[in-house]
Length: 204
Image (cartoon, rainbow, N blue to C red):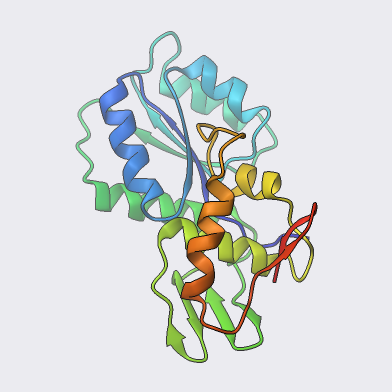
């Protein structure tokens, strides 16, 4: 069973500019982010997707952030809510820190350090090493490696990787997963780590 996955965040913000800005800041840190414009969409989305953190603007159209919080509290969900008033001016670094802290609390235990051979990945510290040398990975490459390691040798289909590591805006017919794997492979060293299974997917 997958025990370590990127933090999944839902951002609810009426205004497209601030919503995109917040989403970019969180994605740079390896989080999977979806964006919705109102409270009704929050309730609809959280009924089908398991989020770790929901970032709510208090003055959402149609249904206030406070009302959304009350309704979410009645549901059997582990998602933590970060409610932002209209007057709040949260810097990106602070937003990332607060979301990351809430994401850790939403899970029953801290993510384990993942080890396979001389490859070691610490999800909490966002550090991956091979043979003791730190790997220079982008946030998305780190998340792909984390998911594959957490699969413990299971073959992970490309579509599963796309759904779990990327957000809903990713075109399912693109070669995004394949391209990311191609960039990740040489960063892991000359000895092959990621195996491609024909008509199956990828595994470590």
